[in-house]
Image (cartoon, rainbow, N blue to C red; front, side, top):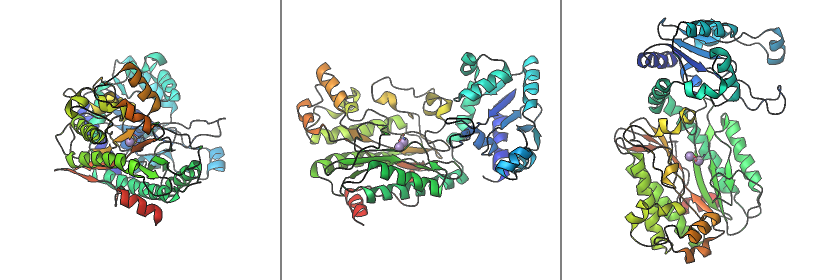
Length: 463
Ligand code: GLY
Ligand code: MN
Ligand code: MN
């Protein structure tokens, strides 16, 4: 947790931007796995963490614009709780750590809000993504669950996005430390990528590293020799000579700030020439994107430049053909990279995605493309100093997609489909780094870049 002043200042900024009404920042509750007393790992709502800092279930933050007070609603533990949980601070003690002087039992919230609704006051809340919070809002505000999303506050969402998008120095320190955990995870995976090793063992080991050094993985680990499946959570295979292992994993620091990296490792530690050729195209796209990233440039433009590097590399290898700009304009590269170049990162690995991808990644100036591939780009708007984003180009050989494009002759003037037969079973390569946009450019997050060149990856495996 940061100093209480940080939270007070953030709430003050929110107050200054929201004209009137009551802001409700609903914390999360425990979520049961298979019976109520056996919950999933608790994860607090990220906007609650941002404004109210407390990483505990059962709390709701209220910011009343007109009466000028910030309150936390929550219940003190009783003797039964103490028997099972040990002594706990009171809600008052907790609230004072985040600069909040006023607290109430949770049961009072419904009275406060019902009164405010009767007075015709605007209640601002963010779109809930958990069923329990939808039901809680129904009870608190009298809105039918099917209408809750519709009544969420666009003004609040946009204001939170504007604040959380620009990372403060204390947040960057936390993200750097999450990236350092990511470094340990990925270098460990590289060293373990031996023929005969189980994917499950590597995935479990690096999840353990995230648990040992922080709050655990920042999202379910993607680790597979079938790296062409973009979000592959199946770890059931044994590593085989000649294959590539794609590992996309990151950690949450204790403070819940995330990291998110991808590396692709040759099983057995040595890339074949065919693998090197594709790998170096992806690496060139990653490096180019990092070179270009600076305030004022739309991330959409960097995505398209990465697409051009990928297209140009694939033309040189004989897998694509024709004019590079035309190919990218027509979206032909998306056969190989059917996803976006990256996203915001912070308290969420896809930062603020609960507030709506377009609210976070697009604005009045730059709207989302509807072209296959680029439509998946989560962040298209102009970069600003203080943004933390990922850079994650990739090349994948997805049999079903290749088959579809071939049979439907999609972009056939740009693709050498005959040559692609040799790449079925190749898998996929993604290389993902995390960067901070600085005044004049950007810097890689974390103390050291995770080994990424062919030589560095092979040396890490061997070492
Ligand atoms: N965790 C998937 C991604 O890299 O965005
Ligand atoms: Mn990732
Ligand atoms: Mn990512």
